[in-house]
Amino acid sequence: MTLSTTAPTRRRLHRAWFVAAVAFVAILGAAGFRATPGVLITPLQEEFGWSAGTISLAVSVNLVLYGLTAPFAAALMDRFGMRRVVSLALLLIAVGSGLTVLMTASWQLLLFWGVFVGLGTGSMALVFAATVVDRWFVRHRGLVTGVLTAAGATGQLIFLPVLAQLAEGPGWRFASLTVAGAALAVVPFVWWLLRDHPADVGTTALGAEPGAVRTAPPSTVNAAVRAVTVLASAARTRPFWLLAGGFAICGASTNGLVGTHFIPAAHDHGMAEPVAAGLLAVIGIFDIAGTIASGWLSDRINPKVLLGVYYALRGLSLMVLPSLFAATTEPSMLIFIVFYGLDWVATVPPTVALCRRIYGADGAVVFGWVFGSHQVGAAFAAVAAGLTRDHLGAYDLAWYGAGALCLLAAGMSMAIVHSRER
Image (cartoon, rainbow, N blue to C red; front, top):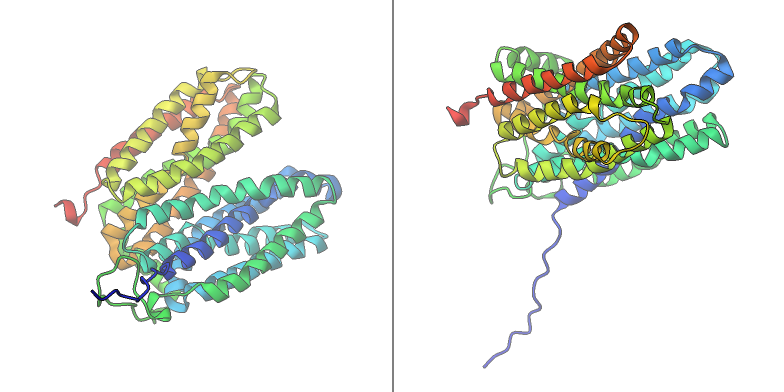
């Protein structure tokens, strides 16, 4: 009997996982950079005497650009590649954050924080995650989308406490320079490890059939023209408006309402602001688990069904919330916090999956526009809830209204029909 002396072949980790890891770090950082202004508002007021309205204007510009840059960034990635676009975005964040230490006038805050950091973080928004998944993964697409989406929540959890301590201790300038240094530190890793297509390293997407086309030729169409053209085409289809409408409600019921007004609403009922802020941090922690689980489910369950369930449960929970506020943290409020955290951005993986299924190669750009509607919804809800509190003396109507809108979003999601279902 002849014994084989050949050592067993060790399976190498597919290059797609390295690309996903780099994308995770970049998205994680972008979330922290985007959240920085909230930490520095008070120090800027104290030093320069600028009004909250002036500083809020810069933050608003940042939020709007964060959403509206996404579809154009997706088109730019098709034209010039992810590596170039993301590297340039990180450099833009570093410049914007670094130059704030030299500010002497409020218009400079608008330019550096609002425009530079807004454009930079918008270029690395969730549309970047969708592009990575589309190009590098055939198998595990939903799971990877969930993990990359969770990077956003993780970034805020990591950066916000650190930056808050820096702003209170060494000062806000040290915090701004820390953000600039972190952005610059990520650039070499992006340039070294991120690749635009599997063919760039002689492989195919993870899970692709042998002999599958390894890459598509780069787009020769102007990026802005392509983004607008894709919007014009998608806008003629019913699923686009159902997706965009649902995601606008998603933004309104999370960032716009709970993210902006939960703390003052809790304070109205006697809860200390640090305690309410701690509850929001817990939402962020459970958001990570919920988003990853949602990505895993998106690979196995019809995405529109997942969206319908997520929105319906969110709507019902918001209608219950007004009765849960109290001066102390009761078990019922903790249950709401855990549940809402699991549901916070669980809607992203199934929304990305539907954009991919319905619009194919244009899916990432379409999702960019859908994500833009998310930010518009958030901005609208933030203002509407504030006006509700000013005129009625309580937030109750805002919670009930958002709950009803989420139930509407559930119905809209279930009404989505695409070619595979016909």
